[in-house]
Length: 86
Image (cartoon, helix red, strand yellow):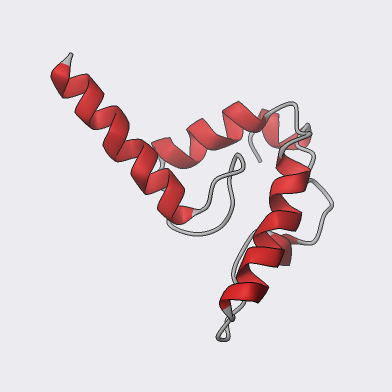
C-alpha cells in the first residue's frame, strides 16, 4: 500500500462503491453507486494524490480521486492536448 492510501477517506469503506460489480449494472444503479463513492472522495484529504496515481498508472477501472474511468480518460486527453499546444 502506498503512503497516501493509509490516509484515504475510502480506507475501510466498501470497495463495491468504487468499482463496478461483475454483473450488468443499470445506469441508475451505476449513477447512485458512483455518487456514494464521490461523496467519500469529496471529503478526502488525499484526493489529488489518488487521482494523480490513477492517471499515472492509467487505472482502467473504478472511481479514483472522485473521477470515473471515462472522466479520467478525458482528463488525460485534455492534459496531452495542452502539453502539445504548449
